[in-house]
Image (cartoon, rainbow, N blue to C red; front, side, top):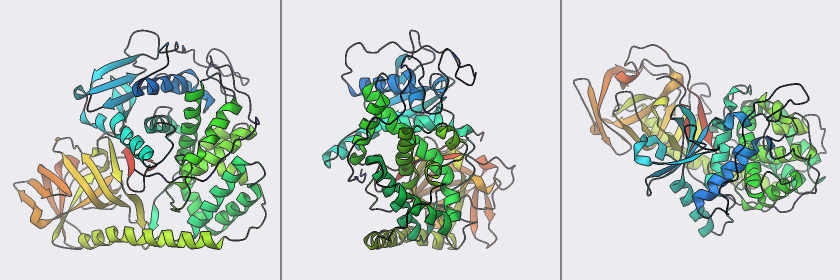
Length: 538
């Protein structure tokens, strides 16, 4: 798997705010409450024990190192990375899974005996199959838990090292810190507003060029104070003026994904240095690894999907270093990190970089051609009577799923959502498994089936691979497989055939609320990982 590298280096001085005693929850610039007292606003915090050091000797195995990282960064002092998260983390679990070993390690096992965080070992084959996913969020023993695949993250580690990369941190660590922030710290109660990270097809190159210039300028400022703020303010102002609608749409992801990636970087540094390290040491270690490419790419791909993550990293580091009070709370209320840094700065006019513009044009043109080679046949199949459209529900997906990108049709921006090269396993209530492999599909569109369009994924099966008899359907198509799925036949407004699963109400059913979907930043040049939030009834 491939992650683009960044050509950056350097460390700042000790300009960050000092951190609190590591034996309590610590504080960031927001002044979060400590564990056993009151903050300066008078709010009383929760009294939760901190763990004993475990193990007494240096961790030797990969599992031991990951468990020690969780102990330090997500239990002992998580509020050094973000305020007001310690109580949530300490009531949740992380599940590390290994298929070859048929083992799971449950970190902070809420049913275990002993000083927390307790770690228990279990057999993997005793858990539902979704726990073997790249990552999974569900309840284990009635406790909200995050699952991380040791096998798939180790494959990423090996690819990275074999291709000359510097491995820091372990991909499992960056994943558990990033996804842990999303799902275990209760990020879902933030008020960042609605938004979308989907790119248009065909995609214009200009916003990608401007966002990349903005990220580059902020990165320069991170690495050498005074080197990039004027330029960053210029590119920011152009984006807000020339592409205001897109910037408004993507802002919620600048907040949610940007903060999760920033926390992942900071927690990775804290896990290595320990809670006793100074803020200057934490920042220095974090910045020293920006050239590795995991948290800040070279930008050569001009990829809209990476932008919220990388803006969150560079802007978050700058806000932290400057000791800006309350910036994290502002992010939780929808104030993007870059917005807080640059919203009131005039900046200095900058000359466009002709080489960067040409590179952006070339990268986006190549992506449009690649994406079009998948989307155009799908659109043709949607109008082809030789194919049958099968409507399934988003929340039937178990575990994480893979997708090559999220797009909408520029000509129909209100009517289309495209999942490029979707691969997923769906488990409807009847337990008739639906396997989807590399099929580009429409999502969130109207269908003649019962459930609301916000829930829909439309799969296409060649009629030649489909058998329907007595209300039961079987597909042998390599991209969409199922056997004995109970269905009702329907026709669209164009008279073309549809199958509506009985599990979803067939062609007559009640509506349901929109599902929540979280997308993980891709760690290669291909498939992204995504997850449908499980806290919605089927």
